[in-house]
Length: 113
DNA sequence: AGGGTGACTGCTA
DNA sequence: GTAGCAGCCACCC
Figure 1: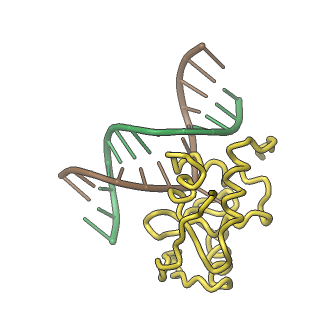
Figure 2: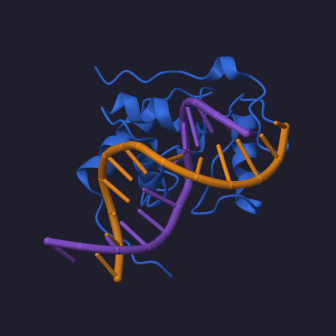
């Protein structure tokens, strides 16, 4: 079991950007990183993985650049992924059973300015 | 202060 | 389409 740490300024930035994503829309780790002035998508992934505000932050709206879902609830595939898929479909995002985004037009760029 | 890890991305074979 | 390698930033021990 991993201990929880207070969210850093960077993480809070990531969560703030995440909350800007409207319902029925999704974004990639990279776009999210750029919106917060970060040139690394991996750092964003770390923040989401450490995401202490699980359901408060719509981390399920973030997918990989290959149009496939990344992970969910600290896992990179498994039952949690299926849950994520269901959630996205519920919001109007069509995704394949494998986690592939069937409608890339739903991808948006966040504007923090 | 130093080293390793990761819910990533891009290019090449 | 799949597989391997390198680059990248922030976090953790």
